[in-house]
Length: 187
Image 1 (cartoon, one colour):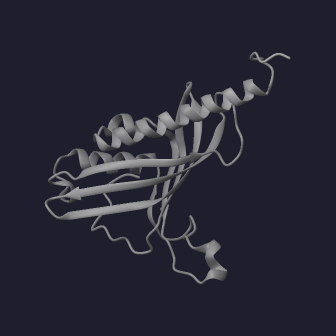
Image 2 (cartoon, one colour; image 1 turned 90 degrees about the horizontal axis):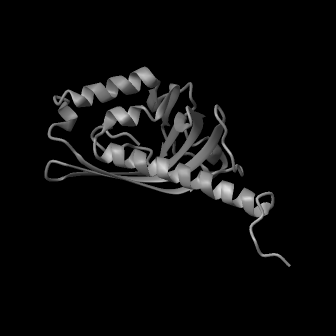
C-alpha cells in the first residue's frame, strides 16, 4: 500500500483546487489592502476593460417573493458602472477636493466566506470563474460619522496575462435603505 503523492491521482486535483483558492483569496485580500490604503491606481488595474461594477438596490418583499429582493440590471441601482465610470469616480476622489472625502474617511474592508459555487481546480488564460464572498466595510469620518456596510458579492474573475482580473462584480448590501450619507467607498 502506497501513501506517497501521485501527480495523476485525486490528490493532484485537490492540490490544484487549493492552489487556485489560495490565489483567489490573496487577490481579494490584496484588493482590500489597496482600498484601505487608498491606492486606487493599482486597484483599477484589478479590473478588465469590459468590467461591470453593479450594486442593485434591496427591496422589502413578502416571503413568497424573496427571490426578487434586488433590482434587476435594467432597473434602478446604487451603482451601475463600467470601467470609464469607475476611473472617473477614482479621479474625483484623488483631486483632494471631493466634498464627501475631505477630510478623508478611515476605512477597513474585511472579506470572508470566499468560495467557488462550482468546483474548479484550474483557470487557464482567458477563462473565467464565478466567486462568491461576503464583506464587512467599516468607515469613520470626522469625529462621529460611522458607517457599516455588510453584504455579499458575486464576481466573475478572468485570467488575463497570467493574472486574475474582475470582469463583473455584483454587490448586494444587507440594507434596503442606505444609512450612510454617501457612497464614496468601493466594495
